[in-house]
Length: 446
Ligand code: PXG
Image (cartoon, rainbow, N blue to C red; front, side, top):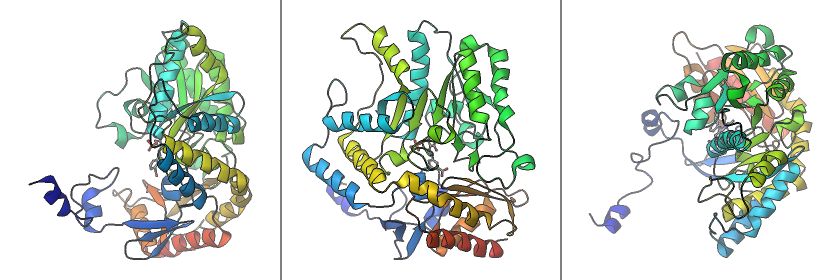
């Protein structure tokens, strides 16, 4: 069939061709949930219903949807410079955004490498870590250490250090030399924690086990999420990250914080590193960097790492053989600059810190609700863990998700955990609505 004719026969009612990511495709297509517009705290569904966004899209729309300032900046950019080559060429907004990201990053994390997603940011950070040691003459350090239940995106590097079984098991041996420390989730000690759990700093010592097994001279880096989001809101216990930092320092291992979710205000500070007072060597970020309006990720590196690369290569030589066609894409940079300006103007990170106690009390009011076995929170994130149905894990939380969506409230579920991470502009009344809707629905879910 000629292209023109075949294209006119296709409409958005045909759901077959799109192979949806991380979705039960057949189930979805039998009862699709389509969103057609968004503004502020609300989506509009295709049937015209308003849906309160309790998940900031996928933990990314931190300033709320379709904010005029960002829309206008992206519009202006697309009319002016659509694309400029990313290699051996660039455009001014990329430098300005890098400088601004560096300015809000902690300590001497002063250099920014742009990617297009969190997954690419993670793979970039892992590559920088291995190459850094090689450049310094420590090429034996190739091992990458992640954590059980960690999520670092879906590239082979991120999967190798990730610790979510379903994401890993179908994809073969992944990267050689990756290993994992144990996760920190423990309901026996930490159920119904508010903020950082009291118990578990010593779990960081598991890194010493891997050092004893592999020898520090073979380990390049450790990557952890300061608050593991995808795996169900697991907040690092008090003192855990500090201890991890100390062990890394002792053995010359780089520490990477994956802040794809925690970056840009989610925990009430620009980065979790600042919130917890622990400085990593590399930070990966994405999502809130552009308020999700245009895809973008980044790796933020300490000055000493960047300078090591700069000094090692001869003048005129490329220092790092890595990059993407769309690294620092003009539209993403325009969105990023407008987003950072909005965060500044509305002081949204401080606002998140200010409303977090109200949010905390509201979510913890669900303690005692049917099926609820744990509630945990930090900043503007909360996890509500449900008792799984006998031999049918994930169903109870997913049924709760579907029923809440019918009542106009959206959030994420992972396993049998409800994850709430609303835009940081949420009002008290909207927090109450999310919590009361979940409470009402839990009474009716079997
Ligand atoms: N690292 C972390 C810590 C993440 O949370 C990624 C890397 C990968 O980012 P990209 O942009 O490649 O998807 C993420 C992404 C969820 C959910 O609700 C979480 C993510 C993405 C989609 C859904 O669990 N996190």
